[in-house]
Image (cartoon, rainbow over all chains, first blue to last red; front, side, top):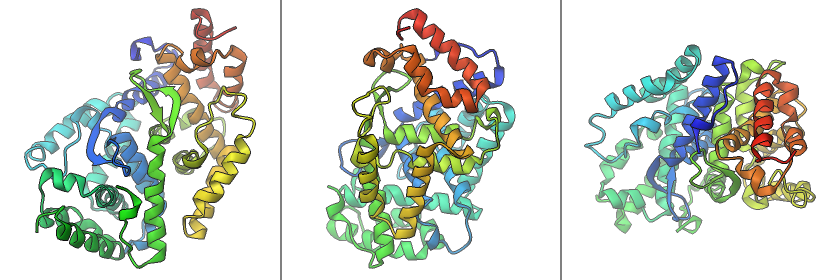
Length: 204
Length: 204
C-alpha cells in the first residue's frame, strides 16, 4: 500500500500537489510528547496542528495587537510539516534543540521542493514567519502552539513536565510569548504554573 | 485525568473557550473508515480535518469559480466538530445517513452552546454553510473533503469501497461535486474509478 499505487493525472502540477498531500499524511505518525486530554496516548503532529488551528478562531480577543486569524490558522496548519523528515523536537530537550535549526532547514528543502515552486515557497514562507515569531500573526500562532500543550499538561498530571523533570523557569520561558502577547491568558497560565509547582509536577 | 482538573481563570469567556478547546480534543477519538495512506490504521476526525484544511492551500487553481482559501480552510477545520457527539457517519452507509441530519443538529446544539454565543454561532454557521454546499467556498471545502479519502482509497487497495461493497454509481455520486466544481481534477478521479472497477475494488 502507498504511493507506489498512485496513478498519474498526466498533469505534472496536479501530480505534485496530490503526491505532496500523500506525503504529509506522515504527520499522523510523528508523535509528540504531549498526551491527549484523556491521557490515553501521545498526540501526533496532525492532531496538534488541527487543534491549534481551530484555537486561532477562538482566542483573538486577548491579543494586545491586531491579528489576522486566517493567516495565523494557515501558519498553524503548516508549522510542523517539516517534522515529517526532521521529527518532533521536544520543547524541554536541550540536546535535540541544539541542531534543530539545521535539521529543519534540510527537511524544508526536501519537503517543499515536492510542490510547484511558488506553492512550496508560500508554505515555506509561512513556516519561516511562524518560527521567527516577529509578526503579530506569528506571535498569535505561537501562543496557540504553546497554550495547547500547556492546557493538556494541566489536565494530564503535568505529563511532559514530569517526564522531562523540567522546572518553573523553563516553562515560563516557553510560555513567555503568551505573557507578552496575551497577558490576560497568561494570568491563567501563571496560576497553573504555581499549582504545578505546588503539587510537584514542576520543580521550583 | 481530564477536565475535572481544570483550574478556573475567573473569566467566564476564557473558561468557556479553554473548555471548548478541551472538549474538541475528543475528535482524536472519532474514527473514520478511511485508512491512513500507509494502511496502518483508521484515521480520526482531527487528522482528516487537518489534512483537508492543508489541501485547501493547494488546489484552488482547479476551481471553476473564485474561492476564498481561508474561509474554505476554516470550514474544513470545523466541518466535523459535531461528530464529537454525533459520531462519524460513513459515506456509503444508507442506514446511518437516514437520521444523520437530526443527530448532527442535536450535536451542534450541545457543542456550540459551550462557547460564548457569538463564537458558537460563527462556528455553527461555517458548519451549516459547508454542509449546504451552495457557496463557492463550501463547494471547494467539500471537494477537499471528498478528494482526500478518495486519494487514500486509491492507495489502500480501495479499502472503504471493498469494506462496504459499494459500486461505481455510489462513488460517482459522492464525487459529483468535484466533477462539477473541479473538472480537471475529476478527470483523475474518473481514471481511478475505472481502475478500481477493473481491479475489483468497486462493483460495476
